[in-house]
Length: 114
Length: 107
Image (tube, rainbow over all chains, first blue to last red):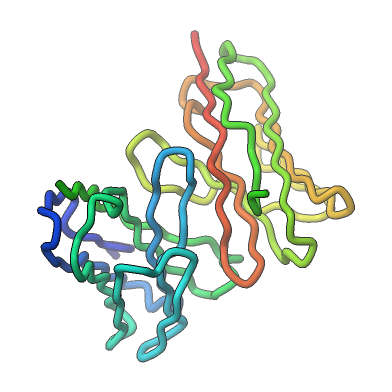
């Protein structure tokens, strides 16, 4: 049981490049989400999904796309990377939307855009 | 005003000390409350849920005051391994994270 697996762990992009951050969970969780964490800002919700085929925007969705074709996978796409997207990205999943059973986080992706 | 506010610290305390963290939230419709722990350069992990009646888990005690929209976490008999950042988390229709309070326990 791997929990939530994020890849890659580290990435450096040039401004304007695109890439996909991968997230997979093997706990059969319906709810999955992407957060970014910046110093002094806390974790901010980018996009989330309450089940396969359903996605919605969080607090800071601009510049990011998501899809949820299976229960297990929830990739995050950066369309045209900008230095403002330099951050640590966490994927999280939960049995329930309200998080009462806790959110399980992946180990994070450290992204630098130059 | 931020939806969830915490004192960023750092709180520097000796081993064995008792330390308390506070958190306030702005949305009175918030439904559930949590404390998460985050070690340096690691992912957040659920420490405990916070219930209206207050709840305890070993050396950790959490309290909720809905009238004042205030949450607290008390750590007794601090250990070196308690050094981390503690995140206050509030659920409205999704989880809102505070920026965290950093705790450093020294020998």
